[in-house]
Amino acid sequence: MYKTVEEFDEDMERELADHAPWKKIQQNTFTKWINKHLRLVNTQVEDLQTDLADGLKLIALTEVLSCKKLPKYTTRPNFRSQKLENISIVLDFLECTERIRLVNI
Image (cartoon, rainbow, N blue to C red):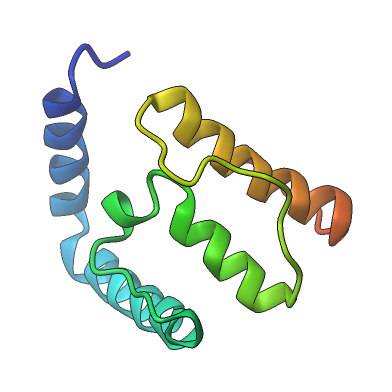
């Protein structure tokens, strides 16, 4: 387990460096795909790791793709628990409402 956010970030950077070219291509491709859809709600992502962390842009993307409104969520998540709850709302919506089977998430 990580003691600080900095330790987590350093580990993620190390992991990214191991397969940097392949991972960078995947990140860029996925970022462009997300932004194509998020344009409809006048927002965008620049960094997947940070911009999706609080769940808000993930909620926006899910609403755009599903054409449905997600249940109540925290619009200004300050605490880790609020951010995780926002992400859980998306995952529950995908599994229960959209009937998408999620594996190893």
